[in-house]
Image (cartoon, rainbow over all chains, first blue to last red; front, side):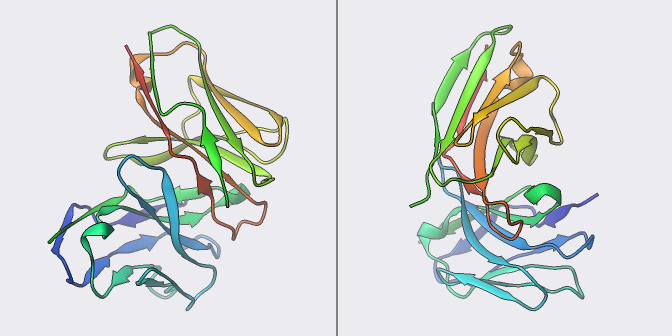
Length: 111
Length: 113
């Protein structure tokens, strides 16, 4: 079946450090790929998406490129802020517009 | 702006009770979803609906049922609550196009005592 694997956390960084959160997906079909972010006490918010190979999604300084050859969609940010502390979820779509999520990666950014 | 509203942020119920969790969206979305979120397990799909009165089982439907009588409202029902259903429940909605993202409510933290 479809699955998404992302790196386990927590990822602990200092402010202004470079961020990478790895995500790989099963290659069934041609899925759209998403990154969601969950701040404490809230639901998930869409961060960015990509719908086909080589697409780059970007938002709020975050980027991810759809890599079909490596079945990856790694999230990157050049300079993290304390306010970026949250849980990040990678997801791929499956049948009936459903999503399959990774288990989430907690990011902690210290001043 | 897109809005998915869950009726309660926190709920405490007793074992054996019938529990209703309500979700309303104001975006005229065709699809609606219920997930539960547990530490170390991520989000798991319980049920979803792609049209009024239509429902499909997700990955973990046991112990749950759903109702969608109107397009904007999707209810999750715990027929006889058990302690292992203590969790965070998230509702989401989306357009029919599978490339469109899902929009989430803020969640209901349910405790079964």
